[in-house]
Length: 186
Image (cartoon, rainbow, N blue to C red; front, side, top):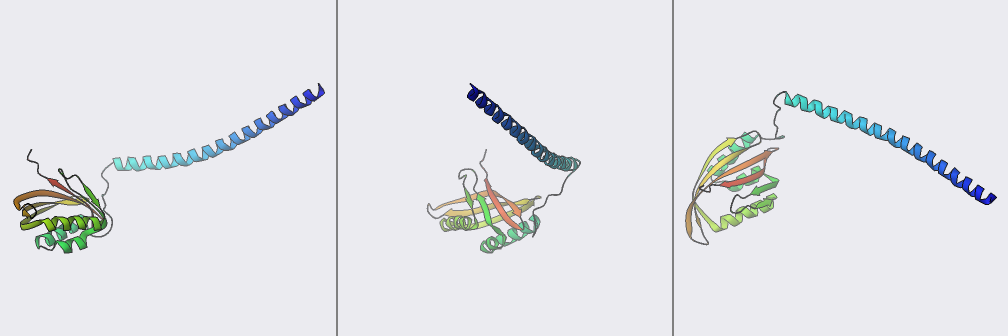
């Protein structure tokens, strides 16, 4: 019977020690949580303040360093009109460019090497008789050009007139994205 009392006393003592340790751990955790919460609250308050400032009026739109969208648009259009597309590609395309073909194709190529390969494949199967470059129409982050092309597809011998709008996004003085939009007639 005495052994049972000692064993119960030991078990009780262990439970009390465990409870104290758990309370101390909770206190520490609570302090840490309060510290984190305070930092998060400060961050949120800063964001809210920034939102309030931006909601008071317009904020500047920037595309990074280097030539502006207007300068890139003017330079690209001039080189294309002069028939110097390869020079335009070297000068204005960013290494990580994404090229998206519009409805019908709905495909994307990523990286300058893949985009140039896409261009070369198209050029190998098409003979351009005339090309008119319209625009540019310039926005805050990019620009658009309209292409009217009289072309013969070599593989089929079919001659056609194409019209498309190319929308370009500029970042740090280079074209980082181009997307081609085709007229669907509807």
